[in-house]
Length: 235
Ligand code: 4AZ
Image 1 (tube, protein in one colour):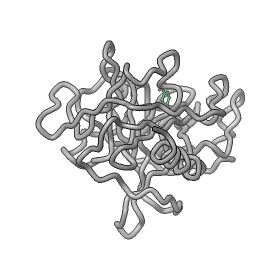
Image 2 (cartoon, helix red, strand yellow; image 1 turned 135 degrees about the vertical axis):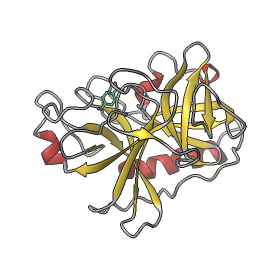
Image 3 (cartoon, rainbow, N blue to C red; image 1 turned 120 degrees about the vertical axis):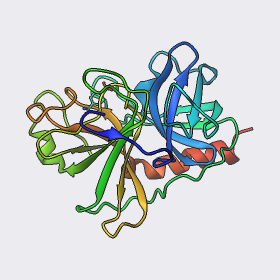
Image 4 (tube, rainbow, N blue to C red; image 1 turned 60 degrees about the vertical axis):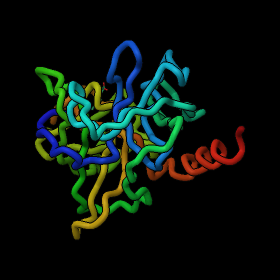
């Protein structure tokens, strides 16, 4: 996250870190049920085997997991069958944990409201350094047509969502991928998951465009279907 600030411990309880044995933190992820998390498909490129991965929850400081953190193995990785690496379309995957976590996920019945307060969170690049402490940044949803106007070479599809901050001062960056874009209802009500950090031309630019997120609302039926299939129809 660029232009954000350090988050308070426990402020974003659904945020998880997707880690591989060799490299540690690779991507962000979001808990959506006690055994299920979402992330983006591109995190698994070239390493789709579940046993390479673990999911760590309740983390603030990557360097000091602490007593609040919980780690789970991955039972299955379900990459969207239409994921297209070249154009970063359908950039989403569902991750089944090997056992339940002791933490409640956010509400995930997305109903966008233009004046919601939205936040991105993650341990991604800050421009001059990688943080150990989870960062948060406030962003606004940008319309698809306005977003498309920044990108000549890429098409903004209905599977995407763009978000940024007026002068391009807050953005996601490398290492934030797969993490959440959540919005709070204007009256200070529930938090809803709208996006997963996916791509952008660069980090932090008012000229080259805002960050692009996978549009979770678009994928809700597919996510529910995968959870159903893997919960009730597989061994
Ligand atoms: C990345 O490389 C990345 N500013 C993530 C988000 C954005 C750009 C790049 C959006 O993971």
